[in-house]
Image (cartoon, rainbow, N blue to C red):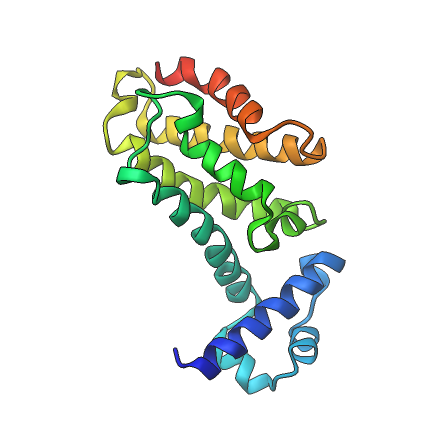
Length: 188
């Protein structure tokens, strides 16, 4: 993508994010996005086939950035069974959320949060597989691997949702402790 295309894409993402913070996804029209981004209809459709594709790409960029950063922990491995909560990739994710990396909190707490939490869970599953399921840590479990991965990702997303609904009063370390206290018996 050249610089002009990147700027256009960023303008579309920004316009879409602004609209998502004000109204429900289903109430937003492509025309509103085009108007706010100050681009033509043809330009929009040269970047995104539909509004749904725009949403998917926005979520992949937002969550992909956070997940990719979390996967870039020193030595690129997950310390779940061999370290403390302070080593947890989940703690790393919570710190990114607390820092409001790329204004993600506005989307996770907006009236569209169920959409974003679903995409977050989807991206989180990839992280869980990469960070410890592929390393064999849940093999001790009598539970099917895909069920365990789904359960852990759902539990973490619900933990984040709970934390946000309580105005993030607890520190990322405390929330990580809560989460690991609940999930540790599953993997132990």
